[in-house]
View 1 (cartoon, rainbow, N blue to C red):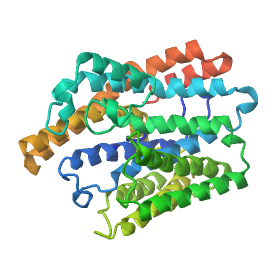
View 2: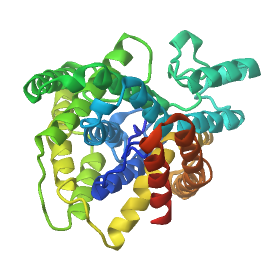
View 3: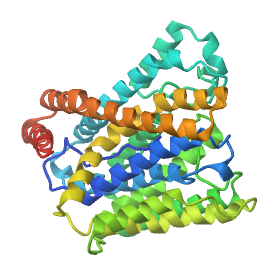
Length: 396
């Protein structure tokens, strides 16, 4: 997979606004589920019926929904004093530093990935790796014929970067003009995108939303379908002000999200049954979870403080963990590792992935974003961006 996704968060380079702390925490929960999904994927043999934590890839669609909600919250009322280029700079400052370090980690670990799963790596040259790395830095996707791993990924050094490609695309569509749509017009767009999602899930060859990382007709269709509905549904949800207050909202929302992502595949060979389930998750359940999570901004307590930590960690975790998954998956398959032994190493990979993400966050992402904000952003935006990064660091 991306995720992916995931890769969204409350924008630390926008003018300071209070955070939806529970939504930050839910993003962290979803990122952890992505890592667990990828670890279990090594034992599925490519068969979705055997996959444990079966729907973990839907975390990317949840990320897109959160992203649309947060983008609308952070920027809908800023356009009178903000140009499109100002918006793009803020998004680049927020997302691009970790994309670069994710690619570097992927390139550094490529030499440990010579397994039967990746036959093309045996003939890859150092110059090819450098070229692919530099293209990934500027988000240029690769065609399958230029891909160096053999999986058809548009970013073969760090597969989950595909979702950031579509994240940027959704941001551009929002900035170019879709932000100007009335709620009614935006509702029509969201409804049509929801129908496209249902059509893909019910009539498609898989009965699921897996895909989007290949630069071919099917991959582009899946990627666009996966981003347009949830992103703009998130924008619409924020604008409509739909909030649902419940007690223990973080626990309730986390449980709903974990169960939705972990349930087994439905329907067997009747693929449309699983498709309907995933459509219900993306179109109905995920917006409900966001409405519940947005019901209270000022939540606090030990569990929410933990959630805030993983919320800050979520994007670095999502965008740096997959080079370890390439190694783990290749090792499990080539060595025919039994599940008990694989689970032990998998737990270690999980811990290492979290540690790498934390180090990237503290030693690289936060200071680099602070520096970039000072160089690229202007006036009050720059000061508030740097202050927001500092304040969030001290709050942990």
